[in-house]
Length: 259
Image (tube, rainbow, N blue to C red; front, side):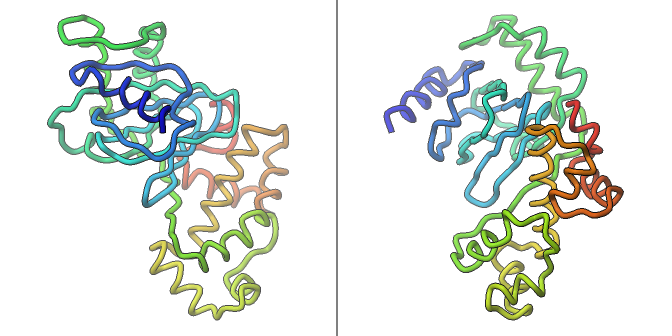
């Protein structure tokens, strides 16, 4: 609780400033929120942002925009990850800035971040750094980039969580609704209804996202080739693996590897 209070004090102690933080601090915190909106940029791995409703996956070379007072919790499982946090003062904004979203870092944004790579701490109105960072924020909504779409819904339904845990680490197997229902002692109809009412997603959609998330981790954390990774996450057809990966990430697996 003391660490949480310290961070929130750092973020919100100067309500009118733009704060730049380049330390990996938020991943040590429980779920929290702050008065400032947050731009969180990820490089070198995959970060996980938990909210009350969904788990969001942020791959390398992407950013997530977190609106003000949006409860969240950041996690990651690699030490190679580099994170930049920029916190913006409370302001009446609409559209893009009121919704949590994940987007690729464009060439323009990368150049602006490179220009400000040594900045750290609070910047106040009247300084050119403040105006530059404000322009950086305003650029985000003008780029019209496609959202990164892997968002796993969560539930507190223990029965459904138990079912998901039973196949989460068996993604290389031939998993079907029929055999998962049978193994869980449920009817296909009841399991289908559980996914639809508790997660608002089908079993097939949920499984597809789990497989692609695991593939993203293997691409970043292992030296397996794409065919091997496809097999590891349950695809016997490398073309189907590549197409599903692209459908959810807007990138081919080979493109994701070099990001």
